[in-house]
Structure formats: structure tokens, C-alpha cells
Image (cartoon, rainbow, N blue to C red):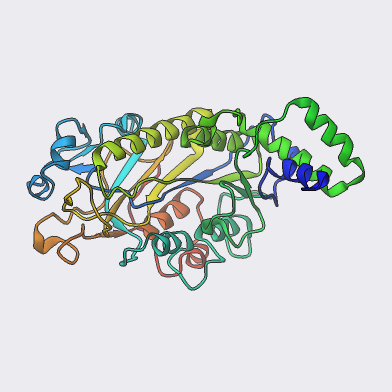
Length: 393
């Protein structure tokens, strides 16, 4: 590899893609009245019945003799019907503090069982024919563009950060999206960066990319030399730092994989949910006072079968669960209509029957948190209207 190409790659490893956030807006103490939105995508199809456990449904033990027993006695009580997986201790406290809304029996409307298509469907906003436009990117345009939005909350500039190696579908289609992810190579010391700065003096583009990459790295405020820096906890912390330190960034996306639990589900999901719970707690902590002006949406592509399989796991299903959290969320209750787990109540006699739609809950957040107009929301999610539920204070 040519020396110039290696050094160029070193600079590029600091920031995977950038467009729309000025360096001056980063790494400064910002005090604004921003309304932040954080979208958390759980890849692999989270099992809803092992996450928001229907404790009062007698059919659960029949369908899941092993899995149900492993979680029912230790579940964290939500109301007189549901309990939270014991790994979700921080989320349970948020619920008790009325800052969390679990939603049961929810679906994007995707009825097949392909992870890839299911994720694409959820990220695009229900349109597998156009994966160059994501619902979150269209929401950001609705927030920034007065031509399609009559939002009461508006700023001169709004942009998004994806904590990912490349722009996810959710944020495609906007020119105000940036991505950041810890470098793959060993962290360089300050002398290396000083030498790079000197080397790039005659190359405006490389110098600008290096400066911007260093600014993003400083804003993330994590040590990317540690192996744990790629874990969801550290990435969530970095996400919060970006939102706090930038006046432009008021929209972010995080993603976490590992939820495809075909076997040994209890042990595997306990690990995943513990990391998710700790990561969301790190996000809240790093946001500080901005938590009061932040809404976090946690969702997955589809659910899992209500009946456990022969390897103490579950297979691809339909209805799932999602979470809405934030300082001004009107939480402390479980949303969604519970359909029941009798055979005749199941979707195709095997899956949890969806009773509400993920996109309508998202539309409700866009209307109540970002205060987007009905016309703007129709451009974001043309097939889905907001629910009437009051989910914000």
C-alpha cells in the first residue's frame, strides 16, 4: 500500500462519512432547547414474550415450559399483567419514574420472516422498493424544511449522527447525516496526528477530513483503543456526547445485533438485554439535562414464535415489543392491546398477533415531540397516522 493511501486511510478511520455538521459545532458546551430523537434498532428479532413478559396469560407456561419458568418468577413487575425481563433494571426504574412506555403486540406490518427484508422494511418506513430513503431521514427533512413542516419546534440547522460504519437505511436520503464509529486500527498518539496535520497542509481536502475526524473523536469522548469500545454501552455513551456537544445534531441512530435467539435463548437474551439496559443507561447519563428533551425509540424488525422450539429457543415470528423513553415521556404504563396466547388468538396460529403498528407510534412521537404537522408526517410515513394516545407530557 502506498504511504499516502495508508495515511489517508488513517484519517478516514476517524470518521466514516461526514456531511452537514460543522467542526465548530462540535466539542463545545452547548446550551440550547433542542428536541433530541434517538432511534435504537435491535437487529435479529427481539423476543417480546421474554422481554415484556405476560405474567397473567396462563398459556405462556404451556407454550414455553422452559423459557417461561426461567423468567416469570424474577420478572420486574410493571402492572397487574406484565413484568419486565430481570436484566432490564434501569428500564424498570425508568418505568417506575414514569419515563418509559413499553408497547406490546406491535409490528411494522411486515409479515414475512426474513431478517434482511424485515429490517429494510422497518428502516425505510414500509417501502422495500425504495431503500435510498429512510423514515428518519425524511423526518429530519420535515423538521428542517419549513416548506413541508409547520413544526412549532424548528432550528436553522438540524442534522443526524449514525453510530455505524456506514449510513443505515433509516438515515438515507438526507444530506445532513454523519456517521461515526471507533477506528479499526490501533489508536495513534498525539505525535502521529501532529505529523499528519503537517503532511496535509498542502491538501485542503485531507486536512479538512483529519480535522473533522479528530473533532468527532473528541466529541465521542471514548477510548477507541479498548476492545470494549465497540460494545453498545460505549457507543451509546458516545451517542449522548454527540447530542450534548453539538448544536446541530438533534437526531441519532444506534444499532445492536445478536437478538436472533434460535437456541439457548434465556442465557443469550439475558446477556443481550443486560448490555442493552446498561447502554441505554449510559446514553441517559451522558445526555445529562438534555434527557428531559430527548425521546428514545427502541424497536426490532419482527418478533418470535410464541412456542419454544426443541433447543430452548424461538424461531422467527411476527408481533413484537418496542419501547419509548425520555424525560418528558408520559410513562409508567404498558401500551398496546394484548391479544392473548390461545391458539385462535395467534397470528397464523403460531405468532403473537400484532394489535398496533410501529410506524403509527413513531408518527405519534414525531407529532408530539418534534411537533411535525400532519402534512409533514404524511410525507415521512404516508400509510400511517399518529395514534391519539398522549405519550408526551
